[in-house]
Image 1 (tube, helix red, strand yellow):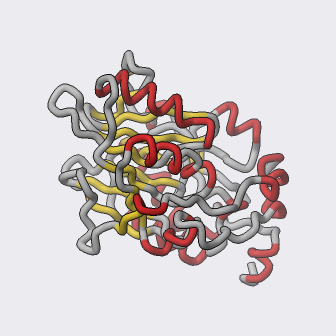
Image 2 (cartoon, rainbow, N blue to C red; image 1 turned 135 degrees about the vertical axis):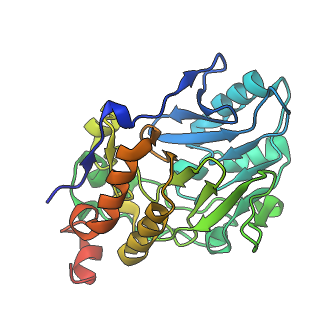
Image 3 (cartoon, rainbow, N blue to C red; image 1 turned 60 degrees about the vertical axis):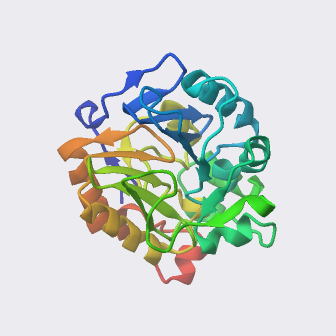
Length: 284
């Protein structure tokens, strides 16, 4: 069994290095890798000072995010909103600090609210999923909830994304109950969060190397594999042209779509761990 699908250099998105430290995916879509996770900035400073932050990285990432934002959008800037794909510690680590600093709403799916309003811990990580030292260390990763209090808002029921015209949000659970992905039909751009990723997250070596590969969601923090499979199938059916995920490099084109369809088709063999208490509980 393989846990990944190789991607070639032809499948990598053609990125422009921006002077603000970000990498441009499209004129209004940029990202920055901070440690082991990506944060995404939406907004084109050439046409507007309106922008949105998608995910907030680790707790130590707040100052770097602010620095990148001010270099890209101007001094003392603030986003119109923060959009959360989900609230795991490496995606929501700076959300409390940034929402307070900027005094802006934080939008999420209602099933993620308990992890963003201080009510509930995520389920324990599963170190038995295999793949490397990151999985073995996963029980040490924080599971405690963030609490953004008055800033927390529900994503609109009509599927629109606040302050991001042309984008819709899709409920893509499995890795987290309220996980969402963002989709723009106009250019078939996808912000996938951790619904699928383009590097092996279970191995410290793969995290450091960032070899482009198509993977399912990070195994040690994925409690619902049936929902995760359905989410990958839903995203593959969109036929995206370009995708930026929560981990790894942005990818694009026919090769990327072929790899995503293969992941969707062979999800049980590629993504679902053969070991670990969650896999055993599901009879896998």
